[in-house]
Image (tube, rainbow, N blue to C red; front, side):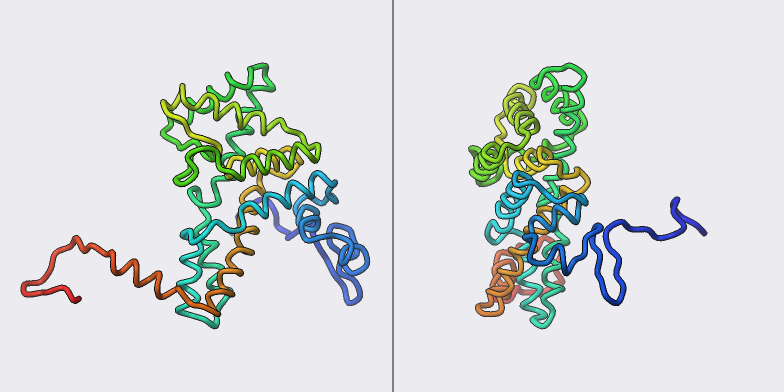
Length: 268
């Protein structure tokens, strides 16, 4: 049974023969290795275009910003997995990346889609504030979170926001989406009833969309960045393991709420 429109697999990314590996129309060995940094190559792989200085600088800044933020859930999952299977770093990395959803790391894509919705209204003639308020209001009415705003630790603006916005401005990037992200922050108190400050998950799409990075690829940027951070944590785990300590702490704080058989006494 045929599913989907295509019957022949096609790709415009790479092909090879016995002598040459071609990536996006370039000879990998002669035109790319040693010529592009990994950040430049990543942009090139995703878009098919060799990046400008501004595009490279902005993508690079976002990768640095999101690579690590302490013992967050994805890191804990990764380290505990490696503690249980120290011969399988790939499995431990996968365990961490599998947690990249709408709450952790995936919020950048959701915030980007929200900013695109706002820009569509601005393109129709609405002011930044009116468009932002309309979209935020629609999200609230649908009981959807406002992605990229509010943070459990950074009650004021996430310090990474200013750093990313400054990089984009210094490199001459299009700041349209930065402006819209600011507008959302301004209208949130009136619409939501409390202040929710910009966090890095909204700053990342605001600067990336301004340098032509595709909306469909936004989730991949935090995933790529966090992969680097996970590898660092796993190298440390192999040298100084805390995976079982993390597991022990969870067990120590456990509160059992189910029924117990007669005569059962909890261990100490």
